[in-house]
Length: 587
Figure 1 (tube, rainbow, N blue to C red):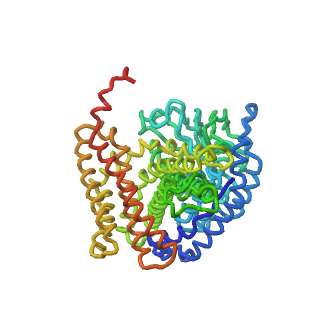
Figure 2 (cartoon, rainbow, N blue to C red):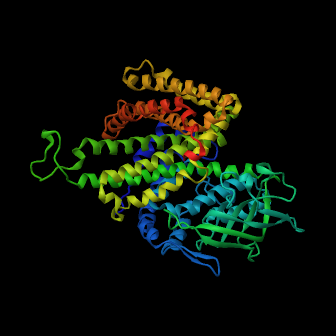
């Protein structure tokens, strides 16, 4: 059984609370006021629920077909027709620039749209998702000629894109990449090498597949400073084959309908994008965009798992209530929602997921501010917020999202473990989020090693001040005292921990490596506490069930989830000592 209703009321509330109307006032976004944005999202949600969701489990069960003689990959039954409908709906073009065939909507709407697609069919959603990343990279680094040649077909969905980074010996450490790019007489390059784990590297949904490939020029310096980036199409613009071959498919825990390919480049013609030896700049444009979307995957799959568990819990009867006044005398057993532990699990999922969604959506809106605000200082501030929060949202969103799906499964007992309710698929599909686009530990190192020190701590100081501004503005409001007090304490704790960790890291980098993931989670819990305080303020004085539930959820977060920071703080203070005392032979 597959159950999903897009949380549109929740989404509108978040957009209202965190200032979407400011975006609608930017030049170029005048046609996307809040009502129009919600109409667009409602149509997208309807399409995903009616078209993507019915194929989710059947495609997972059918899987993919690979022909080793031709290298061709066949997607599950219905995927090709689904993709044609998806493209016809304009989903691939929503946020793209009008000059290349897009609709010019705020980036925020694209992020929100991916929540629906991921929740209803994660495997399918990954194909257009990768294309969006390539579009961003081309817009940022491509020449005018490259943009004209590739963007219209990528934006229309006629072509799709990939990101080719990983090699058998080079995963996290891309400096070990060995794919070669030899100059040709026509100004292009001949690429030779093998890339692995390439999502939708080969498939039958589009006419052409455009690969963004990391490779080395003959004069490349060693390591990461010698990486260049190339556009390598499966078929050249004249329609001829281009020496790009799928060498096989990976067999995986989840996302069974998403082809994860070995791609061999055998003298394939490629075209340099960006400057020589500066390829990581281009690739990180694509990866940073992808990391926010990956964080959304945990939220999206946590949402559909939660809705499934709630539907099950409202129907399932087991045992008697511990409170005799709640016993249903007309039934042999009580509905399991009467049991405190079931409510604990459901509340954990509901409240953490809604808090993560608010933080992710706010970050998405900051991307639009960074690109479109008329004031340069506001653009820089928003860009700082995005840079700081991207590793947090990617890591915490996927980690907590996976835990939330597991919690939903636990609510359902044995039924949740079976294929009947599909939660086991959501669990399998979500697990990869903690691994790809930079493992979560890499996100923690990025946060501490790069983002906290960037601009001599400017990024962190600005965000800390932004959160504290809420405390200062609302400290005298007695109705918000239950939030402003704990939030102020949490921010101060995070500030002190950040400063102490920075000092330790300068003396011993291993201290950062030992506690980085715990620090990232401490950061996330504090940032989400701020979003809940904002939501509580927006809900005050509004007499409807939705807003009353919002206040209940904010209180639950502060009483039952924010205290997790205390155990994280203890782990951070423990440092590296006991874990690093193990010898290699002890493991």
